[in-house]
Image (cartoon, rainbow, N blue to C red):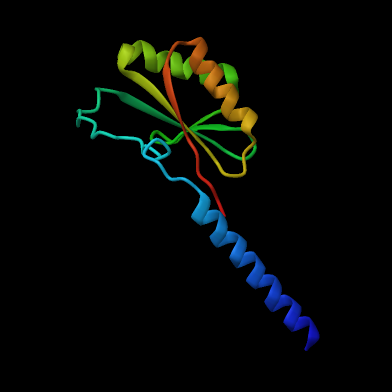
Length: 129
């Protein structure tokens, strides 16, 4: 019972100090926080792109998801992407879809191959809870 009195007095003292600081603090126009402004971006049509979807399995195998073609190693993948680029030119793009349990090094290697061949790429990330 005695501890409750001390706790109540402690809360009273803290509240008195809090209100005291509020009363003596100065709030000026200069101290107002300016919120960031935003604008609505123009709606644009997506560019003409021919997308090549390459999936990565958990054991590091590459798969063309639309054609269901299994690509065994890096050299086969490089030739496959090169033929895609030769066929469609600058509108060719590779979309990397890594399986949730595959190692990141496979996705990075595929991105490096795209960089070597100068093919635009994007990486899809799926987070599993």
